[in-house]
Image 1 (spheres, rainbow, N blue to C red):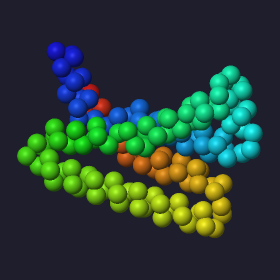
Image 2: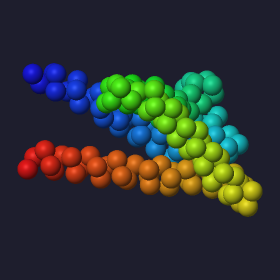
Image 3: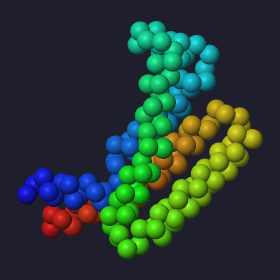
Image 4: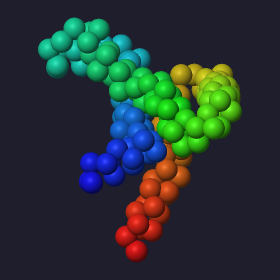
Amino acid sequence: MGRRQRTERSATEPPVAASWALLFGNVVIGCDVMSVAGTLDDLAQSLQVSVALAMAVVLVPWALGCFATNSGQQARLGLAAPSLAPALMALNTSAMYSGQAAGSSSGGWPLAHHGDAPLSWVGLLVVQAAMGPGVWSERRAQAEAHG
């Protein structure tokens, strides 16, 4: 019975680990690991790996948080309302493209006015702001479930 409850719950909840991976990636990128000359080489030497592997250590969590969750999200939408699945997929895809456009434009302004240095910190703030409602709703759901 406990396993079935976990399966039902995981089919409707967003992947929290992906959100944390995105946050981690923004913090690491914000520390200028990718842009400061020698920093990526230093990371590779400290991990005793190639520069390409060190870059993967930085970029893979960020990429998983950004791009690997959409298919799971659409599967959850389809399970939530099978009769509305085509409309939900269309709306979800439109929202994803709108978010990419908003992110591109909100990143373009600091890039044009301040260079690339503040971009990862702006991204970090946006991710934190986006995670806020999810954390709030999870806490609210837990409080309602417990009494």
